[in-house]
Amino acid sequence: MATGSDHGLQRIVWKKIKESIIADCRKSEVWKILILDTFTTKLLSSCCKMSDLLAEKITIVEDLFKTREPVPDMKAIYFMSPTAQCVDAFIADFKTKPKYKAAYVYFTDYLSDDLFDNMKRHCAKYIRVCKEINMSFMPHEAQVFTCDNPGAFQSLYSPKSQDKMKILETLANQLVTLCATLDENPGVRYKKDSNMENAKTLAELVDDKLERHYDIDDGGKKKGKTQAQLLIVERGFDPVSPILHELTYQAMAYDLIDIQDNIYKYKGKDGSEKQAMLNEEDMLWVELRHKHIADVSAEIPKMVKEISASKKKPDGKITISNLAQMMKKMPSFRKQLTEKTVHLQLAEDCMKHYSNNVEKLCKAEQDLAVGADLEGVKVKDPMRTLLPVLLHPYNIHDKIRAVLLYIFSLNGTTDENLNKLIQHVKIEDEQEFIHNWKELGVPIITSPSLFSRKPSRRDRSQEEKYNLSRWTPVIKDVMEDAVENKLDTREWPHQSECPAAWNGSGAVSARQKHKASQDDRRTGSRLIIFVLGGMCFSEMRSAYEVTQAVKSCEVIIGSSHILTPSSLLEDIKALSKGPMETFTIDERSTA
Image 1 (cartoon, one colour):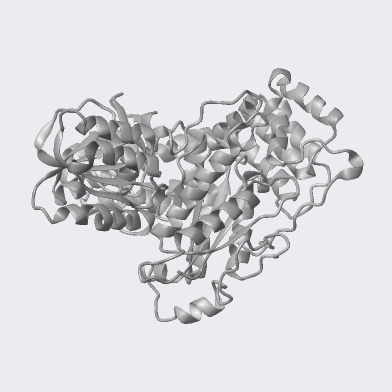
Image 2 (cartoon, one colour; image 1 turned 60 degrees about the horizontal axis):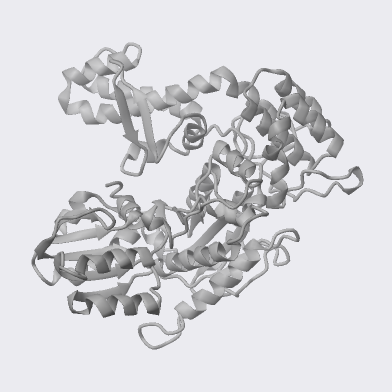
């Protein structure tokens, strides 16, 4: 199982699981079996390791939906989603011949009365505990969570969608369990958009469900609003950030290399297939992931040299084969070097793609996104910036990304102009890559008289930046404005008021003055951002950067799922198709 992180969302989730599930069972000093569905398997894998479970006297972890051998002298802990499929599988374990001595049953979320009655009818005498623990989100990183639902994109934005309200209800329930896990009752705000209603609808649902959840607390009193804000925004709010080629390590790796389920696969020097998990267990990954690739490429060889120098090895040129030799000769350094070798290889892979074609693309992309060149001179004719990209033999996806950035820079183009661009890129049969952005409320076709005004951005001219990384995600402006209490209430209406003292800087930091460490900061204010329709890695990075800069406020960002430029383009294209098979938290347990 994955990360045993000692801070952030994973730590909070693991602590709650220990307090609400394992503590119940600890009273009896016998070893137990833990039975999980697909969702809870992923949830547990994100926050603990098998050794953590063994330490809690859990000896076996089983899949709820697979055939299992009966162990009638052992007690079983069931941790599962509150769905008919899970309840049916549970009942099957006890209905005829009981598989286990007793059952401790825990659901991630609210269990309907009819499912509860069904369980009681068939298995009451075996159930020792039955609880809902309010935890149906996925802690992805210290400050990042997802609802583990990529299919939500189609449900929210496809014109043929038949389950939009169901998905919004599910996402709202998941957001409430996040707030409950953090022990927050935040003020809720959303980005107003005349074309799109999803953010407003979700804000209403979340606020209503929060009120009901916190109606009566353990002390018999209603829980008031806490020092937290929840901002809800739609993907179309910033179409640029998820399309640009990013040059920070994590974003670049997931864009250019085929990394599935956070597993990086590469070939060793001997040609053997190797793989490495990119998660918060790997402290070097945590240290490097938000740095620019130029810094990463300089730092890893330096680290390797320091290790080799400590063993009095000649410096020489750092190559994969040299490292392989070093590892054989120095077993005590093997683990340390393996970690560095993985990142040396990954950084090399990134740089290979970069020098092949990404470097040339980046200047044009940055000029189009920022609306100005390196010297700060305004781009007066975006077509002149775009043309060299279209004339160069880049792959189709890269050209589509550049065309989109051109259209976004103008807030839409004419039908005639767009048709010429589509012919130029030769995607006449795949126009959906571009046209379907309108389903997200992003202007694609605009008549010349109706070009709309672009939103103003924060001035970052004094910030030090790499020439090919001048763009800042719009969400970072929002985070900073929220923390400084500068969000315009006309653009960001309050679905519910949060305490007037919440401003993330003045009042909160004064109250927090004596607390400086990162863990202590957790007791301060929180800003929770939720992006409907997927978030990208540069937006995730922004949450850490703002938290680091402000100190008194922790920014947490989440979404239905995490997207890469390629996955977003494929999702956009698929909006033209009929209703897809999508998995919500209610259904995915059997997926």
